[in-house]
Length: 212
Image 1 (tube, one colour):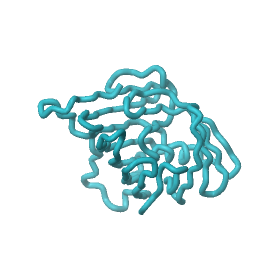
Image 2: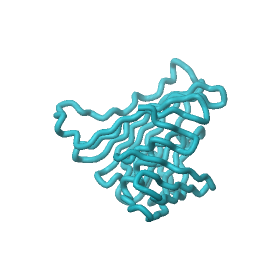
Image 3: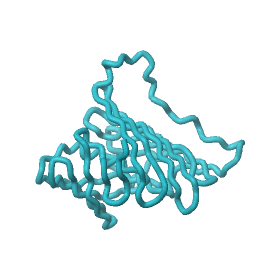
Image 4: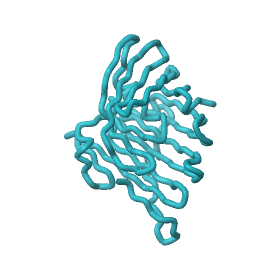
């Protein structure tokens, strides 16, 4: 389970891990896309920047929203290898008065670690899924590279909200047209996801819509 810190000046979360890009030339960023989403089911927005540097892919974003009357701010950095397989993620911020810090690592043997503790339940998962964000749909969409008419079932390591526990989640993706995917999860949730040419969602079945 992710660490929750009761709101107290003496219990600040560790500084968010940031990607060190000092010395990187503009030409070394191989591909880049940014967007901002508005939530449709509750007040909130989320902005993200996705880019690659030749060694891997990075999703760097922040979500602000209201949950059960509580103001929430969650920042995240997800690092993937060149095949879009999750290798590291950091999530921090707050949910109401609780400060949040989660660090997730996945190794080449298929083991996943949450705050340094192995989470056996998600052994051999490939993708991280953030319960509070549409951004991680990008990972299987890019990794699978489905053609129109193809479908694939995957098993993701699901970072639940608001518990911040890491659990397995079966997911099915079907590419129904060039820019539309049908999504179904093991919880019974179903959605239609419209993406841009990069693969970022621009509309997500009544939950999020891109505004820029």
